[in-house]
Each structure stands twice: as C-alpha cells, then as structure tokens.
Length: 102
Picture (spheres, one colour):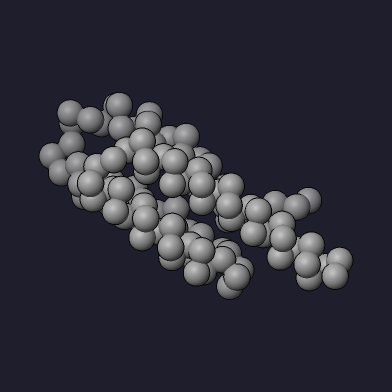
C-alpha cells in the first residue's frame, strides 16, 4: 500500500475544520488561540510519525497555516491542510518509487 499514514491526519482535520468553525463560532472567547491550537495539532502528530524527508515540507506548510490561523482565514486554512495531505502524499510516492525502483 502506497500511503503515508501520517498524512491522513491532515485530511481529517481539513474535513473537521469547517464543522468546528460553524459549531464553535460564537461560543469561543478566544478564537485566535483555538485556531492556533487547531493548526498545531496535526503538524505536531506529523512531526513524530513522518520520515525525515517530510520535515522541510511540513515546516513550510506549518508556517503558512499559522499565518492563515492568525489572520482567521478559515477557508485558506482548510486549503492548506488539504494541500499538505495531497502534496505530502505526492512527495512520499516519489521518494518511495525513487528508493525502491531506481
């Protein structure tokens, strides 16, 4: 199976972000802190469970996601989480094929 399981968390968070944004929109006293914590969680998990090849990629997308979270751009945050999953999977596939079939 050609799939990096550490990237599945980004798909899950990308799906859950608009749901939690709608449910908790008026109930949070500090929305910015919630979005920073929400952005930190999938990257923190990915740092522990991903190969070293992903670290520069994850750091770049983590910084991009933090800027979207600080500006409260929820739609762009969703796109960043999904992009991390998709591009990470492409990088994983290329590295896997390069190391196993080259």
